[in-house]
Image 1 (spheres, rainbow, N blue to C red):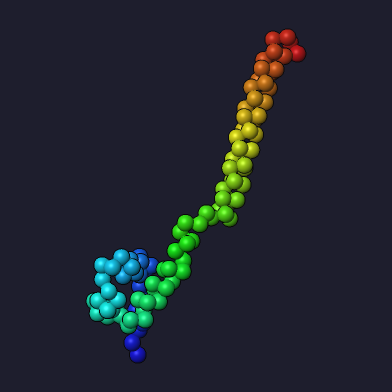
Image 2 (cartoon, rainbow, N blue to C red):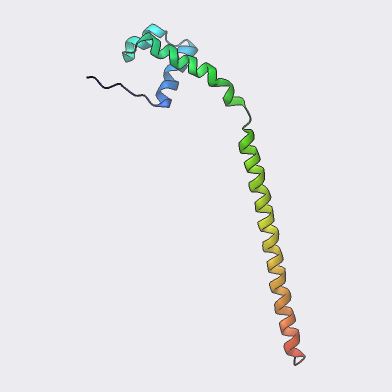
Length: 101
């Protein structure tokens, strides 16, 4: 029993791009790579169906990115507050040492 060949997404993209750009016909690609004509047609159909996703704004990613940015701002603010508290603590400690307290 023969194994089915598998192809990388990059290879499929190159083949479909050659077909869509008109560089080669479906028949030429099928002969060159020993495909059945339905293989390239299926890849082209998938490509055309998913093409709008390339230009879509990833909303879930942007929400996640906004959340990450907010958390980073919070970490920055808390870090700054901690630095100020440490400096204030050291100043108060040195003042109390001078006054003998």
